[in-house]
Amino acid sequence: MNSFRVVTGTCRLSYVNIMTPRARDGQEPKYSACILIPKTDVKTVNAIKKACEDARLGSAELFGGKVPANLRSPLHDGDGEMPNGGEYGPECKGHWVLNASSKRKPGIVDRNVMPILESEQVYSGMYARVELAFYPYNTQGNKGIGVGLNNVQKIKDGEVLGGAASKPEDVFTAVEDDDDDLGL
Image 1 (cartoon, rainbow, N blue to C red):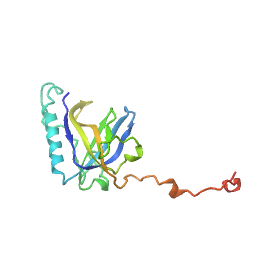
Image 2: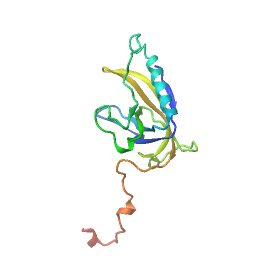
Image 3: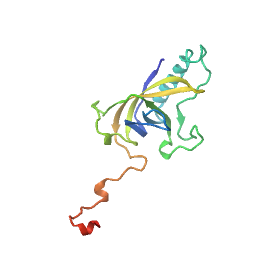
Image 4: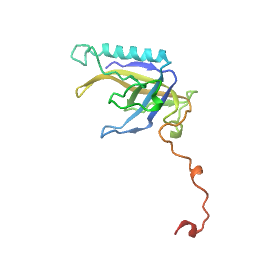
């Protein structure tokens, strides 16, 4: 099956599961991220739209020799409604939104193209460039363009999204070695 690749400009990542795969609703674990592309990044959005169209045009074999007129698009307006009818979170406002996943762990590097190995460096809210692969799918009656997550380059830190855990030194104080204070 053909895939059509795009490397994004700087975007923000949300719902990041790129160091460890996550299983949803009993499905096979996958690496994934929600990609938030600023609406001002017309170059990336146009490249994604072209990759989606190329994937659609290349899908004839998957659909019995016919190229479908319309397939479910992976690109959504963060100022509009989610495909399920819900509302996007405030971090999505002013952005195009798409979800990407992979069974294979994506390559993850820093701005100097050095591998990132510490999971604390990769989180929802960071800014990155992402290599994506667009491909047609036809599974269980659902027909559309899917997005594979290939590689991630962290560009800079950002405000953590999703109720970040606090630092232990901000929560706890030192405890004396006295059993009375410990309630034992």
